[in-house]
Amino acid sequence: MRHLADAAGDAHPVYRREDGHTLLEVTLDDIRQLFHSLDPAPFRQKDLDAAAEEYIVGAVREIRQRGWRGPVRLVFYLPATAIGTEDARTLPAAIHNYFAYRSRQRGLSLQEMLRRGLVSLLVGIAFLGLCLSLRQVLSNGEWESSGEILREGLLIVGWIAMWRPVEIFLFDWWPVRNDQRLLAWIARQPVETRPRPATG
Image (spheres, rainbow, N blue to C red):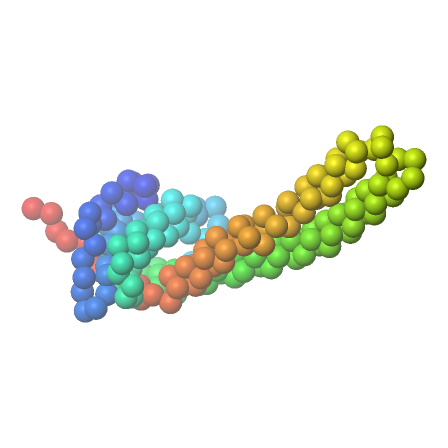
């Protein structure tokens, strides 16, 4: 049995269009190539193999980057003997369940990131306020002439404390949000199995 990384090479090099859908097509020797072999969950609740998830998500990203914004149909070509099996019939539900689950996971990660960013922001603001207060103290009286370096150091350190929350709120959150939305979108796309074309 070939691993999915090999089977993914059987995907059509140019994405075909059919009935308004862009087809993401993969040929498999065995439907269980798609799933993590050690996952004891029922078939429709199994985790996808890491290579399978990476391939599907990467292909969908490529399709969308080409400007094809319509729906995508995931088509898995199986041996004819596998088409009528229970695994083949439950494959669409298994794919949908998995990507919906991964989207929820990313949503939870986003919430945790924003919560951590908010805590970091509050801590950073408090620390910056302390540094500015100490700087003000050093600007008065006997420290005025001798504490210039220390005063500037406090200003720099105070603003450095703001670096992490600023990074989270300006840069870190939106890739996670984009991943969440993409995974949720994949979970809504149609999935079907077809008999593998006979080779001559």
